[in-house]
Amino acid sequence: MADNYTETTTEYVSWLTNNGVKISPKLKVEDNRYKDEGRCVVTTTDIQKDELLFEIPRNVLLNCETSQLVKDIPAVLTELETFSGSEPLSWEPLILCLFYEMYILKDKSRWWPYFEVLPTLEDMNVLVLWSDEDLAALEPSYVLSCIGKEQVENMYQLLKRFIEASDHEQLKSNLNKFSWDSFIRIGSLIMSYSFDVGKEIHNEGKEGESMNENDNMTNGDEDEDEDEEDLEVEMIKSMVPLADTLNADTKKCNANLLHSKQTLRMIAIRDIPSGEQVYNTYGELSNSELLRRYGYVEWDGSYYDCGEISKSAIHKSLLQLFPTSTETLERLDAVIDENEKVLDLFDDDTIVEDTYIFESDGEIPFKFLFYIQLMALLLQNSRIEKMGPIALNKCMAPTIDKTSKILQEQKVTRKALDVLNDSLDTRMKQYEQKITDSGEDSLEPPSHEASTKEKRMRMVKMILLSEYKSLRKCSEVIREEFGPLSDSDVLSEIKQSKEEKRPKKRAKTR
Image (cartoon, rainbow, N blue to C red):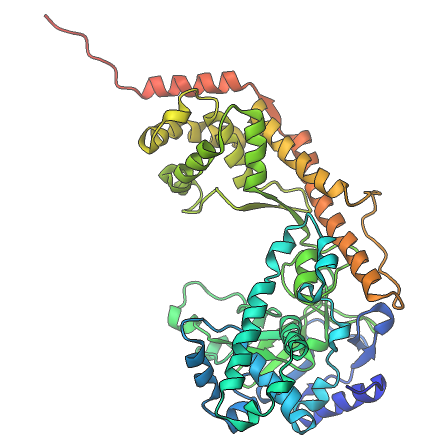
């Protein structure tokens, strides 16, 4: 790629306008490398809310319908699907299209000026690129379980075998260019820069739907009363030049991408003063997810930062505080998971989750509270270990009712509170071994001159601090707002309710 940053930026903007992209004269693409933000879009004049920022014709998008690959080899994507057999395809078709454009056609590709401004592998920090040593620094964050390196390797091997077995010389003769580095760069670009775009708007009156960015983007708000057929919009993963030049921020978002039949339009969602950067959003993502998917963090914290506690961690606390076994806990989980009364209370959703998410505003997951309170009461029944599913469900009914009632009163029993505190404290201690919580709300970003290692370790600290503070806030809320009740009193009330519902025996008559 060219080294002349300004020149490639100028050529990129010219390429956009030459291809029909309409850009407001109140905007400019600016070099923001000194903040480690690469290129960004900045206003040169005040922008009003609802003002059009830019408009992109759909034929400028790069996807599996517009790529030169499907014009040169029309059957190639069908062949790839057949070759994959029972393996469902995800990003493979778009990766193949980008490989053809970027590494085979190169400067003959229509999108070459766009490719010239995309980051190189060395400039990316998505977690799939990190070494095992660097990833280990992220312990104990659960983001480590979401990276999916094995799936990425399988995807690479599938595409490599397909190119090698291809009857098409344009692909097969370029197998040597399909290296791990080229594959991982293309995949990282798709993860960081792509949009899911509606292929067609079925309802003429619904043009202008809102788009969120990237790999879990969906259509905007729609009228639930409309026919399902009207709402069905097939999505196609696409590279969207200029829209992907915007940086994203959960707290500063001031623009939104709307789509219609012929174009995608970026609209200001609030007034933007002159000299301010235009921001999109990747959705409701925590700092750990921003780092995993896009390779950056928000240094003042994401609006959606959160911590997590696993069910297995809760089980450890229960095992410490009650004379029970792992087998009993798993048996209770299975019964709770299918209990009709619980399902009715939670709109057919389970309360037995693999992990429970604790948001930075201190809101306690109600499922977490309900699960722990219910388990704490059930485990005080001396016969619980020997009960089968039918007896367990019968035993649970009044306990579920009582759990619901006391939680509505913002209370828990003393033993449930012990489990809540123990599970949170144990989880926070895992972080305290890695960070020193100074009470800061944010960390300063590393300097632009810092090494990749230094930048990554600084982001690691930000991730761990963000998650720790979310857990700590929730712990504080529990200690301050949940008054403990006597377990024996609550259990007596449950027993009394059982007796009241039990049919009374009729007196014998002579």
